[in-house]
Length: 202
Image 1: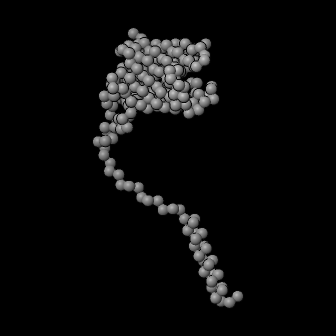
Image 2 (image 1 turned 90 degrees about the vertical axis):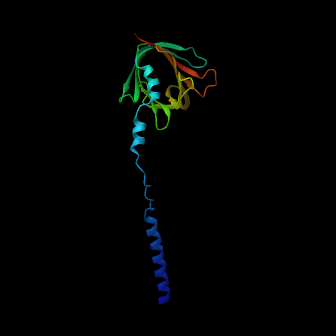
Image 3 (image 1 turned 120 degrees about the vertical axis):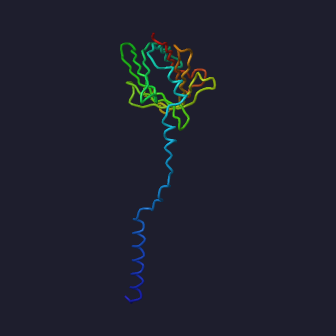
């Protein structure tokens, strides 16, 4: 092979190797921006505010009348007991609820709070009938006696996933309030699938 051809082949091979090596190199990542730390903002976001005072209304022991219903089926009524208590120095409200349906025990834990940084009420709950953690977030009404939160939940017993929900906490008096769960895939006025009426235990 003429020397000129060999030189061309060598240059081509070198160019191919250079491309292959470049392809193997990780892409350069831009350095993170230089954030300015403002600890006063962190302190403000971490301090319970006026919104938490409304949640304080729920602290205590309650008896609960529950009605669960589905379109085309008779509602199921049962009772429960619930205790609300502050955790993490008044930042979150914890509810421990216990019920029995036909001798079958049901336990549920709910956490209700207010995210001061995002300006939203937050809800997370889990129970002995599921391995999922369900969350929702929302706002208080103008009148100040109601919180409405929106989220997504699954219903394994119906083989349904990602059902959009609305949860409403409605204060009636200092000794009574209602929690409603709506399945937003069901047209109004039948979207209410669970109603929980709380009465304070003296």
